[in-house]
Image (tube, rainbow, N blue to C red; front, side):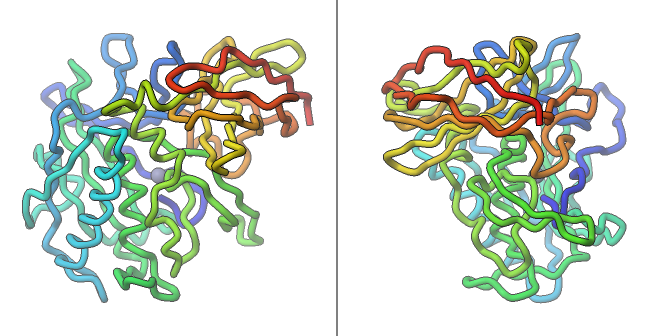
Length: 345
Ligand SMILES: [Zn+2]
């Protein structure tokens, strides 16, 4: 999670013993194309989706506090954030607090640790999540979250001016910890400093944080709920929710990385996805059944590398467009493929 757009620090040194860390953000399998961005691990030429295979996922909290936030405060705030993800009725992932530790996040010790570390050199990174993965199987062994102690922090129930809210930032990082990539459901404006200010966000997984003092990101949005339910489906997710799929073309050619948003006219809820393959296909799941407006837009409210690996050729040279009709998403089924046509800027 960044104060301004800049890559989050996923990189860590490669470890021995066939263990690696995930250094790049990749997308999951595109067919059948659920379009949430996930982390992928290359295993023998195949992309394996990064996710926990056993629950509850145990986590430790480091025993070090910062000004205004004790280790116990940190434990309370991250506990509330974990509980928010765990409360999603259509997702099965659960978490368990395993204790306080003197270990720091970022150590490859097999234990998942959340804690503060001072990294003034990372002057635009509020917090970051790293992973330890078995390179031979793609199995997730550990995930650590560090909160940058170089920034001012707060756990005040109503937020504190000038300080970042631990629970809000933890909620975003725990999305990563669970295997979710970034969502593009947000609007920003450019600042004269070169950074961006968030005007609105319909996803906790939007890569740029609200300004200090805000507690707006303590609550999961429809897009976050769809993403975690896609990774860890539970109960009747597949039968109660529906999906909307199709493709995006420009000049008759498929485009990659177009951001497609499904807006439920009845509920006002929004869920986004991306075109993720050479055919320009997308599929947005986790939608409440009913009529939806479909919009496609270029990925221009943050750096494309906040979403995709730099090697991916993301097309942002097109104008926002809407599908020319309302699509009714069926309960437990798919809309049937729709085609969105866009034109160059
Ligand atoms: Zn992030």
